[in-house]
Amino acid sequence: MNDIIKIINTLNKIPEPFSVDGIIKTFEASSKKIIKSFAVYFYKEGSKEASLWYISENKSVIDKKDNNKKYTLFARGNKFGFIIINSDKDDEIISILINYLSIILYSEKLSFLANRDKLTGLYNRGYILKYLYEKENLDETYSIVIIDLDKFKHYNDTYGHNIGDHILKNACKAMKEALKKISFKSVLARYGGEEFIIYFDIDNKKDLYDSMEIIRNQLSETDFSTDQYSLKATASLGGAVKEYNMNLSEFINKADKSLYNAKETGRNKSVIL
Image: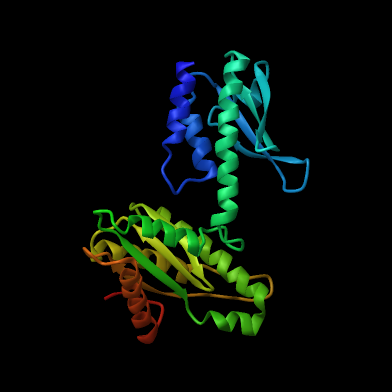
C-alpha cells in the first residue's frame, strides 16, 4: 500500500501545464515497481469503440498476456476507456490505483475541453492569460512572444476558409517542432484568429531573440501545400522580457508594440523593443 500512496502523491504533484500524456508518463515512471507493462485505450466520442492511446515502454502487456488484467477507466459516472495491465500484484491494490488514475485523467479531459482551442488543440486565450496572471506577482523574470501569420486574410479570401484552417493547423505543427529545438520551458497558445502567444522561462533578450528566430525560420521553411495549391507562409514575431513591477497589461502591450514594429518594417522578422 505504501507504493500506491507514493504513486498517488507523485501524480498529485504534476505541475501545470499538464496533459493526458504527461499524466500517463508520470504514472508509468512512478509505478514500475508494481506494474510491469500497460496499455491505455480511450473510447471515441459518442462510440463504444476504443482506440489505443498509449503503450508503456515495456511492451510485455502485448507480447506476454498471461498476467494481463483489464480495468475500466471510470469517473463521474462515465466510462471513458480502459487500461490493460501486466502485473503480478494483488488485484485490489491495482484497482485502488486505477480508480485514482481515472479521476485525474477524466479531470484533465474536461480541462482540455475548457482550456483548448477546438481547431488547433493548443491552449486557448483564456488559459494562457490565466497562466500569465498567476505569474504576475511572482519574483520571476520570463518572456512572452506574440506571433502573427503574415497576410493571413489572403489565404481565406483567395482559397477559402478550409485552406485558412489548413494553414493555422500546420503552422501550429511547425511551431511545436520549433519548440522542441529550444531548451527553455515554453507554453504555446492560440491568442485569437491568426495570432499565437508563447510563454518562455527566458530572462534576457538574446536568448529570447534566438528562440524567436528558430520559430520564424521553422515557419518560413515549412511547406503548407495541399493537393490543389502550392502554399508558403511566414510570420512576424514580437517579444518582451518582463521587467520588475511591470503588470500583465503593460507586459503584453510591450510585446504587441514589438509585433507591430515587425509587421510595419517588412514582416517575416523577429523584433524585441
